Length: 254
Image (tube, rainbow, N blue to C red):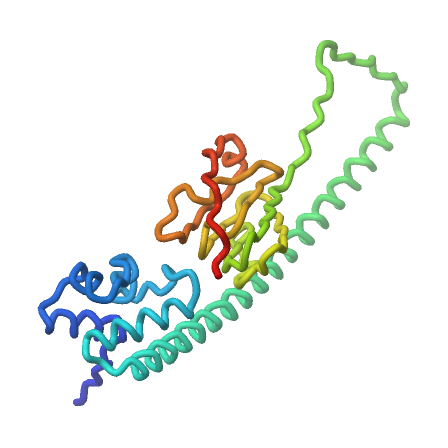
């Protein structure tokens, strides 16, 4: 009887090498100037914490070299693991689509059956009414007037509209209603617009490089930012919050 042992993942190797060096994440930060939050993300395998993959690979190679590992081999292992993750996600997505298609087909069959029964019942009821009406005198029902109740028209569902104006080139990730719509760089001086019904997820690589407006109201992109990187979820409630006065923007990078 044989047992197969899976090789350790990249994040586990990073943590193992650091512990062998008997050093802490704070000491690594002081030596490499890599933020502790990013070091924790590398050792946890939480690569979504990085604003873009290029930053993740750059910090990974620098950290691996610091620990005495081969940085190129570490980057290659990262890409291999990510390909496996993406393949698994694609497989799950295909399975989910098949399940949804089956459920929709089942729901359609139920709707058709219910519709057929309603038509049969309505036909029987109409036949019964016509048959009985010929045997008795037709009476007009008294009109019932309800006073004091005016029809209320529902307010139209106003979408959320996000406008981003790049003061200079900036990386952004936008997910309206939890669906990825844009991930990349917005050119300096250009503007982009996105719409959603309930919420818009925003991740910014440099808060000093962009201005946001939600339904015409300015958004404080600096609130909650860390090292010029920020992420936020904008909803209709965000329109009720008054943005803090924005500090003067620094000159564009040379």
